[in-house]
Length: 316
Image 1: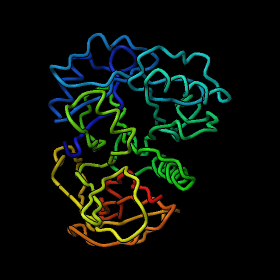
Image 2: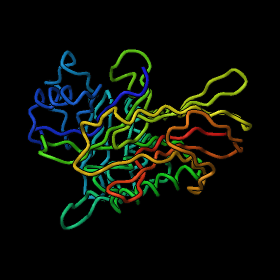
Image 3: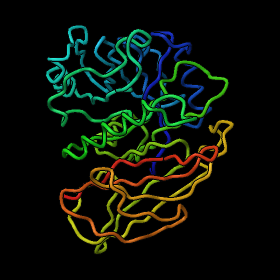
């Protein structure tokens, strides 16, 4: 497969959503999503109603606490969230990983008390290598909010420290909205579209956060091809880009969107290369101990804005 549109943050009537589980699956199928994650707050009760003949689904849960929300996907055993506090979150995350699950940080800079008590991430993570992904964008994407900018900055700072963490988008889907511009996470799922393969791809860093356009790259050197999430050696590589601006055009809002350029970004958010959005190939020398991600930039109602961000490749 090649970068399929997915939604990894969904709710139903089993917590605070308006969807019946079947309605969620049917809505996701109608939206041409390839797989979703059911992540109701603090409950697995909706899992029994999932029907992969309608749409494949990842069994998950959103740990909802006073110190932050954590998305747990694919765990085969129950890990108790009720006693999770800032000082024991590393042990809790390790327990989730031991149960076969992966861990994502939901909307880390969501507005906190008193409006969204507990939504802001305040857990004290010491060992970030056990965190698999971070929601760097969240909810309606009509404008990239200060919340999303801070989430992107957090993710970038962790990449700079050497952690290999995937980026995701979370619609935090509760109901059928009448309007709005919602993105997706494109995941490079290898093989059948199912929970196991989707989780494997997320862990491997094969994700792209997008407001709509399908956008990804491969690297080429000495007859070998590498993809997003891979570890490579330093040296000169050819980047080849794929850009489909119309992939999810139907999900756009009322705003006017124009694509303009591609940026290659590395440590410290430094742009090391910039080219037109329709460029297909370019060469770049990769340095040791650097990560490299691609960003698709354009304008929304005349305001410059990033439209898609890939997870990085890592030059070791």
